[in-house]
Structures are given as C-alpha cells and as structure tokens.
Length: 256
Image (tube, rainbow, N blue to C red; front, top):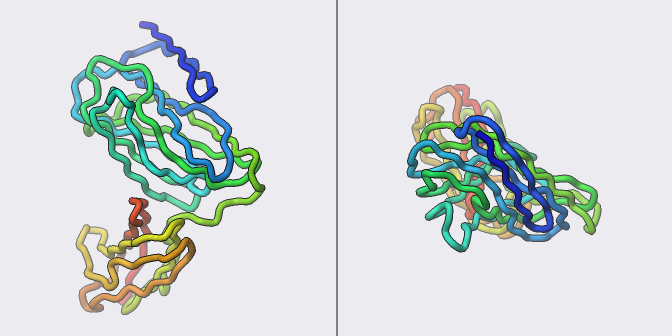
C-alpha cells in the first residue's frame, strides 16, 4: 500500500509520503516564524486510516511551556473530522507542558487534512526556538501506531528576553511536613486558583483555603491548613488548577 499527500498552510509547505500498514497514523504541526506576544492558530495536520469505529480520539502534544502559552483548540468550520473538541492542558515541568486534544466521533474510514487548530500565544523573545511535539494518539483506550513530526517555531522581530510568567506549583515548605504546609505557586494571568491535597491512594484531604484569587501575574506563597490527625506518615500530592484549566502537581512527604 502507498499513499502520499501534499498541503500548504500558513505559508509553510507540508509534504509527506507514507508506506506501510494502514494502521499507522501521521500527525504533524508545521514549522513557522512568529513574534513575541503574537496569538495565532496553528493547524494540526493528520493522515488517519482507522480500522474500526471509535467514539473518540485523543491526541497528546508536548510543548515548550516557557515559550508558548496554549489557549485552546478550534475545530474546522465544517465540523470535520470531529463533531466536538475538548482541550486539556497540564504543566509537567518548568519547560514542558502537555496538552490533550479530544475528538468526538472521528471518521471510521479515514481522513487527510486539518485535524484541529491549536490556539497559542508566543511568550519568548527574539532568537528563541519553541516546539510542539505530537507524542501519542489513542482511539478510546487503544494506543495507535503514530508517525509524528515536531513543529518548530522560530521567534523573530521581538525584544531578546525570556518570558517570566508561567503557571506552576514550585515549592512546599517544610518538606517533609507534619502539622502545617506552605506552597509557592505562580500564575501567568490573574484569576482563581484551586488547590487539592490527596494521598497517593486517591483519598482527598480537606484543606483551607481550597481556592484563592491571584490579582496579577506573579509568584505567591500560600499556607494550606488541614486537620493534622487526618494525615498519617506517607506521600501526598498537591494539585493546583488555574481558572484557565492549567494543572500542576507537587509531591510532598509527611513524617510524624
């Protein structure tokens, strides 16, 4: 079997040719040149040859979190190949974010073209390179063989500075903790920030406050209060979620 395709998007030519099993899927994000502060929608281009009907597809893309801010996902105006799209963004580390694009009712026969438009804002300054790297594609609970191409974004015509505003959960004091816990967190934009504390077995621990309002971008310190005798020695996770949906985790140790 042999199929080839060619498509030009945003002044960037994309040419590919794939030989082999129809089960292998192709996902690529085009290389482009942007400037600091610019908000754009970049196409996620796919070649899908699905062997059976599925109610959903889930595409995972890693990205340079200190250079790009992911804002959302936009469907094609015709509503094809997805009847609906969802967007989940998680910060894995200071420089790596993970976004999931969820597609409802994908085509069962195959599709070649734009899967979705990824909306983003450029944070970094001149002479910086950002990246978007497709890494996983799932049909329901089944991982599909994937051939993916990383999209490189060169930032030009901007002040040569690095970004300072990112969402994240950075530090817990003290660690190990026993009766009190302070966390340091950062937000890139004003808004509500939500916190949860739970054990590794999934048990939720009631904390106060569970939500705070950050009036401006920056780094903050928060004291989390809880009933001390509800916590035994062991490992716990702090979960932080911003109003925009960015999620961060921090592992802490309790010793009594």
